[in-house]
Length: 172
Image (cartoon, rainbow, N blue to C red; front, side, top):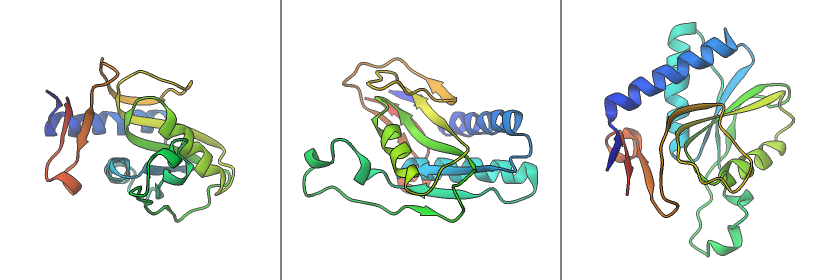
């Protein structure tokens, strides 16, 4: 079942960018970090929206959390570790972690642990395109595109044109 189409995703990201501008003003100390995989593309789109309004670059990074997952040993030999790329100092920055779906909170726990290896940010906030509930850890997003009710065993898929050829959010 479709939860969001391409136009709804575009509008939602624009709304989220507006919320960031309201809270962070000129975003002087803000950097966006996309969590591999689809969070990276969402962060890049948000950064582009902010940059268009502010007329300047917003620092961006890419974070792979696979080595920090608490289920790493259960994932087997096929687990793929991606790249982490942070081209700015984390120390003292306001960081915005961007993820596609917030579910149990375990991905975000791993992301926070990974960030510590790069320094001590002044503040870390979380933006999720979709919040589907079912937390196993006390983690909440500061910015949410859409909150949906799901069963624990449902699958929520965020498709992005950069990887999937089109934008869409589905629940199966």
